[in-house]
Length: 366
Image 1 (cartoon, helix red, strand yellow):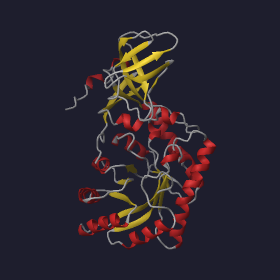
Image 2 (cartoon, rainbow, N blue to C red; image 1 turned 180 degrees about the horizontal axis):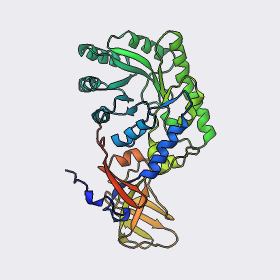
Image 3 (spheres, rainbow, N blue to C red; image 1 turned 135 degrees about the vertical axis):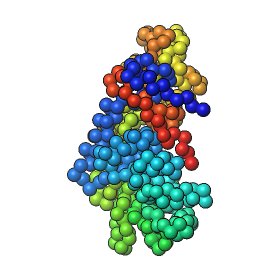
Image 4 (cartoon, rainbow, N blue to C red; image 1 turned 120 degrees about the vertical axis):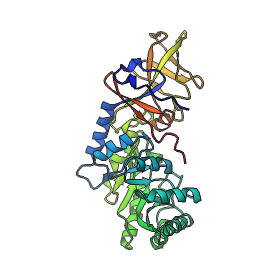
């Protein structure tokens, strides 16, 4: 059982928080939200941000207030929480299969405007049958594999064949295509990323143009993440982008040139032991994910390495300025998986805690 946060910390200094804890700098997060919204003003591309990163209905509502046309969710569980928080336009970006998922999808479709994706005719037929039984039509995108090699039907003829089948299914309403170029999000150099992005998204847009010529609905052509969304408006067929990490950022994205968002997220830790060339802090595997490498100490000429579930080592090459009890802020290497380790954000402005926000879709893996 998780312990409820102490509301008495609101108004206190950040450095007085118990540790380890996840801290969200609201000033920086709002600047990131504003920058993304401004980037698409006057273009033909809308923003449908992905909530799998921040996992917070509060942040999703802030995105909608800034002009987002809806949100994306990776899992049904995430979508159910977002719908329960009053969000009415949700794209589930991953394929759904099996009776338990279909029951829940239909339940979700009864309460909000949901869009699902398919890359397989049999799976699409099963969704259609469930929708017909419920006297519903579910909006649907055909999901294309444009290079990530994870899910999606091949572009061109295979995608067109599937789209034709979906368009004839009585429980589905074909509304377009999705093609996420996830393999390109962390290509460091701008020119290289732009060239690869252009080649990948052309597979999506050429398929969309073929479908349009055939009279099929392509009102939605959805693509791109934080690393590539600023390139999407070059493609006339693209209608929306799905950035997620831009709200908080991480060190993995921080290495990617030309993105321009601020690090608004950190894990606050405490020094619990002093070593010869460094200190041990109370943030290990349970507080910081390492799938994209180790976290980076903020404002310190030091390196962090996990030392087990509960501990991490912050090491210095030129003297150790820290003592037991000092605080160390660590910038996560991967925001999505680190956020999923925590129950709440401690929201700050300047050096003060102004709110505690639950990470409402944390652990919603189903």
